[in-house]
Structures are given as C-alpha cells and as structure tokens.
Image (cartoon, rainbow, N blue to C red; front, side, top):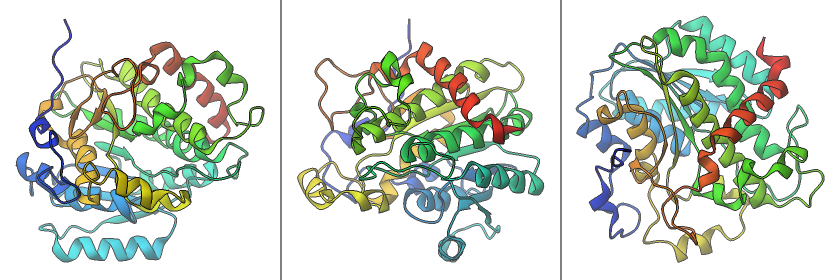
Length: 346
C-alpha cells in the first residue's frame, strides 16, 4: 500500500491570503529543518540563479553554509544577486557563477565542464531556469523548439553530464538529489508524451504552434525526466540519486514577460498567488527536507508531496496529471532525449 503523501505545511495552504501570508518562505524551510550553518560539506548547483526563484532558492540554501554554484547567462546580473545574498546571509562562503546559455547545448556542455573543473562533488542539482509561453514558434541555437529545448533538453544534458558526480557524491546517509522545476502548466499539453502523435512533432513544426501547449509539453518533460532519474538511480543501495519535480506556485516573475495577460491572471488569482520567497519554498523543501531522505521522488507542490488529479481537473486546483507520471513515456522520452543531445554528451 502506498504511503500517505508528506504535506507538513498543508494547513497553511487551506485558506491562502496572497503573497506574504502565512505560507512558508524558502528561508523558513531552512529554519524549520535546522540547517543554518549545518551543510558546510555539501555542494549545490542551481540553474538560472541570477534572479527570481533561482536567486531566492540560492539565498535560502546559502545560509546552510553549503558551497553554492549558480548558472547564469548575464554575469553582471548574477554578480549583483550574489552581492545581495552575501549582504545578509549568515554564511560568508563565496558563491560561484558558471556562465551558461540554456538555449545552446554547446554552452551547457561547456558550463558543465567548467563546473567539474572546480569541484568533484555535487550533492544537489536544482534545474530551476525556464521560459514560458514564447509567442511565436522559435528555436534554440541547435534547432529545437525553444521551450522544449531550453526547459527540458538543456537540463537533460546538464544532468546527464553531472550524474556521475551526483552518484559518486551520494551516500546512504545523504542521497544526492535532483530537483526539476515543472509547473501546473504541464496540464496544457493534453496527455503529454503519452500521446503517440507527439513523437512525430516534438519541435511543433507540423501542428499549429500554440505557446501554452509547447510550454505544457516542456513542463511535462521536466516531470518525466525527474521520474526516470528516480527509476534508474533511486534504488541504488550505496549511491542513490533521488529526483523530484515540482510546481512552485503562481508567482509574478520574469517568467511572465511574454504573457500580455499576466497582470489580469495575477489579479484574478491573488489569494493563491505567492511571493517569490514563498515560491522558492517548495524547491528548497525538495532539496533539504529530512522527511524525504530515502524516499522515492515524485511531483510536489505547496511545500509537500502532491497527489494525482481528480477527474475533471481545472487549473489552478492542486494535483498532477497522470501523464506526468507515465513510466513508459518517461523511459521513451529519456531515450529520445539521449539521441537528441548525444552530440554534446561525450
């Protein structure tokens, strides 16, 4: 019989009252886990760490004393963010920047190589960066549909290149963790990769391009990616790697820059909307919660493990779609993704 989902902050999400309400922040998670200054032996890499959720995730985790690496394409912006973190953090440990453009697999491969030249340890990888609802069909430097290429394939390649280090850094006492930021937006891609037709049109070149369907496809891919990492590495008795995907919540960040309805969406959903600090809480919980140690990774939201959708799901009701946990689709997506990034994976 499956165990009940761990949802330690469920009561605080029953009656939300907008950003800054009683729902926990990322820093509150570190406080509740009693981790301030306790992780001097840990190394953490966060993609997209220059602003938004990535920066707040880094801020909270830096307080543990861990060695933090951030990827960024705008180095000046990342340096400003790091300066802000260090101005208030209880840890004085330097934060490293890895230059990386997620729209280029060559840049991802170079960034992974640069990271590995600086450390032989990686305990937690947080695949945080992403883009959303690109208005017109666009492609990455390598010719992949922009949202699938940036949100999924770049992180798939990065994770693949770093998995040997995640494995070697893992112990039965503290298993390495991979945290993928998905979204409730995975529901926009009806049936996701469980739909056989999707494999003939991964780049959205045959069907009419829809920015939200493409976004939903990429976020479904993030969830399936984490699911298959768990299948492949989670049961290793000596060097396990567990993986979670998550919905951070509704937050107004730079992710909405392409959505002309962003202000109206935020206003209509203000009661359930979160501050950036609250939005980073689920990422930090997946990375740090002691209650998850040794537990099989899954989809999370509202700072807890999620449950499958009820029939007739309507956003923004909590829950993940069954196609985001389809084992066969996850395995096939892994195989296809390996083929697509193979040129850069050697």
